[in-house]
Image (tube, rainbow, N blue to C red; front, side):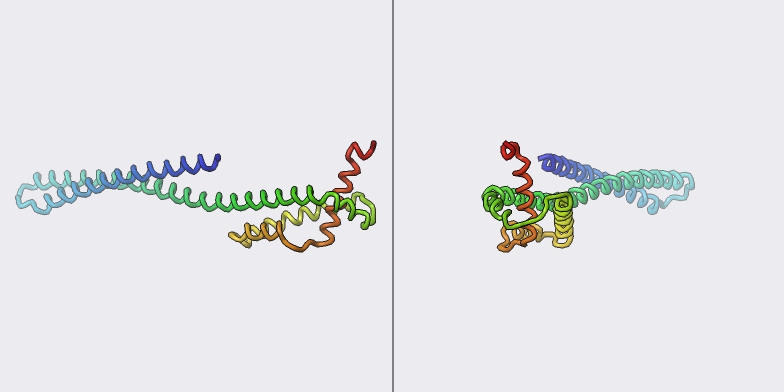
Length: 201
C-alpha cells in the first residue's frame, strides 16, 4: 500500500515536470524566434550610420543572452523530467521483483503451515524410527540447513529472475522429499512437543 502511494506521487511529479518542460520548450522557442528576428534586422541593415548598426547589434546580443538563459532553464526542466521518468520506471521494475519474492515467500509459508498441521501426527509416529540425541549438534545442523536454504533462495532469485515464482511453486508442491530434510523436521516437532507444558504433566 505504501509503495502504491509512493508510485502515485512519483507519477504525479513526473506529469507536473512534463508540463513544466512543455512550458519551458515554448518559451525557448519564443526566445529563439525573437533572436532570429533581431539577427535578421542586423543583417538587413542597409544604412551607413555606425551608431545605428551598433544599437541593432547590441539589441541582438541582448536577445542572444536572453535565449541562452532560457535555454539553461529548459535544460533543467528537461533533466528533471527525464530523471523522474527513469526513477518511476526503475522503481517499478525493482518493486515488481520484490512483490514476486514476497508472494513466493507467502506461498511457501502457507504450504509449510498446511504441511505441519496435516502431518504432525505422522511426523510424531515417524520419530520412533529415528535414533540419536537431540542435542546442540542437531540444532546447529538444522539452523545451518535453514541458513543454506535461505542462501539458495537468494541465489535462485538473482539467477532465475522471472522464474522465481515457478521455482517457489515447484518447491511447495514438489512430489519428492529428501529423507534428511524429513528427519530434521521430525526432530524439530519432537523437540517442540517435548518442551510443551502438557507433556510434562
